[in-house]
Length: 169
Image (cartoon, rainbow, N blue to C red):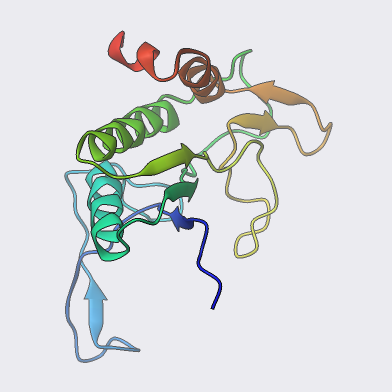
């Protein structure tokens, strides 16, 4: 068997559940966590879960480099951008929180080689069509105009400074 070169981790949310005999399958009913923001998908914003996941996967698959291959969020954006850059404070906060979780995982010894935000642009989502906007760049689907969101500016700064800009804000 050929060994793996790396393992990709996709992380968006956690799910807190309780026993519910009427829930199908598995008898696990979802429990809302009102202390945290919620995306338009209904997913809880929980950066600590990314840290926990990276540490667990790293300990379970020792010696295998990791990449965060998808991490992002869907929040409401109007059909047309409001400004350039388009304001998206919830996505920007989520990105900061998840990148902080990545930094803490690195400090804890996780062999993490890369992080990829999902997604560069608003696009077609298989389960939701064009109704959910995950992009760092706003797409006006009628005109196809692309406008960077504030989260895109932050992500570009993170890449340019190797994360040093996160210490400033």
